[in-house]
Length: 387
Image (cartoon, rainbow, N blue to C red; front, side, top):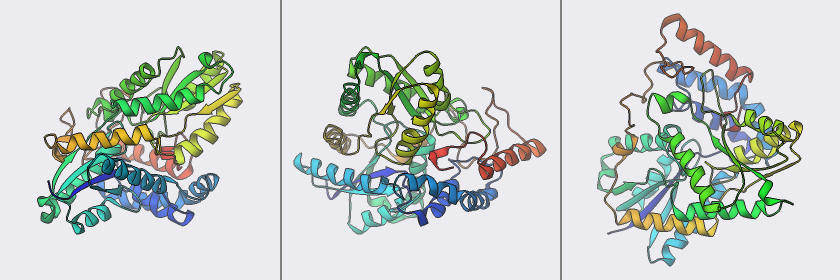
């Protein structure tokens, strides 16, 4: 088979406070994150947002220790996965490719080329597929493959999503059960799944499978858990003047409190590592919201990080991918509906199911509204917990 590598894909995060502004610039330069009516506005807007919002974002990172733990945890996951693979007889080298901060995906690919990897498994650390997470990284890799002929000698395969994996479901169920049993009456605890949101237009116009995969994943975890608890699924971290997947976490929590829920256990379902959205957005903001609404006992399930059942299952997934027919990048970046998302050619208003393409003055009004919200911090702007 030749030298084998595994490329883990993740978002990335600023290691220290000085990294926040350039990290934000990279994030908002991605058209999969903010879709603008004119491509030439992308980088100027990214510069404006990152410059204007850096100080507030730094305050959020100060709350969790002055930087994101995502790189450290992902490195620990990579080492644990490599060790697990070797215990199973697979001598594979594991690499990390972050989308918006070091080590960038481009840096990982340079190391993969340098090490003479001949067979590569591309594994996103997002259990569910979305245009804005795995899809963005896949599009970047597709571009790198097109521009660099030397990569054509690498036999690679892609794993688009893996939320149905039995080890992943078992590890999640174990973490939830451990937290439930800390409550006085575990069966009365309301389990609250909070997933990262995406715009409704991604699902309805582009066929993004994310919502369906999140909903199915939630049911599979509850089935694996096999407890009588009621549960809710909601979406956090929305941005901009378009409709995102509902219900919104910040609205669902007070509604549960009004219905008499006293014990709430939050499960960060779309995250496998601790980072700003778990440590600051859920642990600080949503905790304060819940307590103000009258929920007396608020707990969160920790992220999987290097949970041994989870890591061993990832190793089995990698081994299976090595010995299965290859899936290429072009196949996984093609959405089910034939709508061009990359690059974004038109601004689409997402308040209705049948979104219409804006033009002229209407498009600019919408863009200015988005710009005002992004810069001022007013409105529902919590994308990746940074604004």
